[in-house]
Length: 441
Image (tube, rainbow, N blue to C red; front, side, top):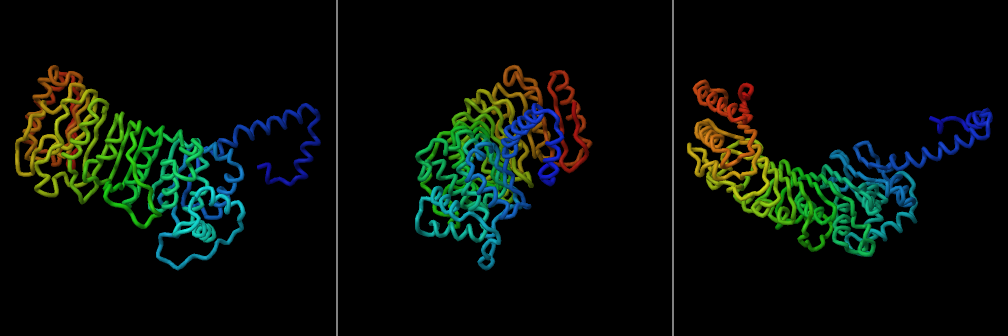
């Protein structure tokens, strides 16, 4: 690297360039490289476990001194292993062992935090800066990322003050109520995870950004009645109509079918939800909530990790409802019991499959089929294929995941159905969970 060479070597090279024009070209080239590569250098901020507070403080001060560098940032990512000392039960940490511009940070705190006094006033922030709290150092420069497009935080639990700052930006609260660029007008994708009640509220906050299109969450406990008291005080929540088109939640939980979140999306095209272990999925609530997306929803994926059977008798016969009125739904992924309303001790569905599906359907994926239900499910699928021109003329693919090892007595039924699918030009895949490899026609 040139910057590691002694200055004498650089002078020697320059003296041996014969033509003045060549020196000028070299200067112009270096200036061009600087202009082109500098934005690329700051294109993404990716905080990993290798980031020390000293390194983070250096970045924060560089962005505060040169706000144009912050305008180059399009992606902000923080890994799960990257965290702050503040949430560990230890003694107060010592002050940081590096120097920083006290005046610069003093002014930055006052530009971000409107609270002069109180639990989270200026004095508290100054103390956290001195003791190396990474959350505070991030919160100081984050409002400068006016061209941010993508946001990923793998454990929101460790970002209480950053959450607080983003909430104020979204709500146009002081001190972010004057400049429209503080609204993060280009933020279109976000991914959040965290085993904390505040994560659900933060998801709702992200819906308020005008350009948001895709939102992913993991380990989200959606319960609007809960609020994590460990974080700084919250602003009153106001429902916002979002233009978001894709929602995806894995290993999460919701008692009311993500009611507030889904109802805030006026143009939802894709919804994917995976319920975590230890909770039933309350599919009937999701059915009621998703009914409002009948004009726009194209992909629906809803499932639960672990045991395919409901955890209690109340949910045993619950069904998600009908999708017959959905206009553009093309892909449906759902558990057999949740769609057909089959209980763990019953053999026949409560409703016929052909009554539940929309005409626009192209791909049907049924999961968690138990041995007792298998003959009835194959019968329902056979009826669907035979009546596809009247019911689902666009259907082209059917997947069935079966929760048992291969049973020879089912061969005849399956082979007959596969033959029917081949004649009808419908691709059928039979997937065996916990058994041998699946079959495909």
